[in-house]
Image (tube, chains in turn yellow, purple):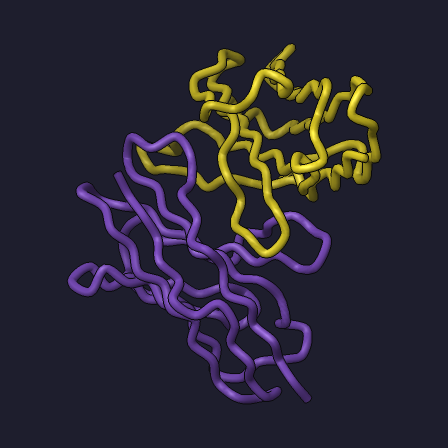
Length: 116
Length: 113
């Protein structure tokens, strides 16, 4: 199983709403990532979790709040978003080194978020 | 610091023609290189990777890329493209201590009949 599952696939929310994005993997990967991708742009790193601890926060506004409740789950809590936050939000995971060799990242299908 | 440059934002090509998508990187340490493909409204799928060993890497659907350290390049090639290859292609780099990928700006491959 090399799958990263993201739910929901689509989300429309108002600027006063609170919602959460969910990401799940069962590959035993201990590094998990959130990326944001605007139309016709490459993914931009938001957060990195390593062994369920936040290790990188790329100066993301506090209206985005990540959470890693266990080694298989990664959430992104959303509150008071702006229309410019509309984007495709991608989750990825990566395993530990395999016999000293770097391992690649696997991506989910993304959540298409629209803020109205 | 590391960076990736994909000079071609769009590459139109006719079906069954060969194609090359260019990728150059810069890094002060040894790198790992990847090509990801993104079909419309989907996530990223790993196409191929260079971690070590042979500098020529191949995918199961006919793409290949060659790591050229002296030219700091990792160009993607396919000898004969299909309509179904139409997608966005991202080159990405990380290094031994890197925890996340740095992506190029992407190249839109448009295969025409």
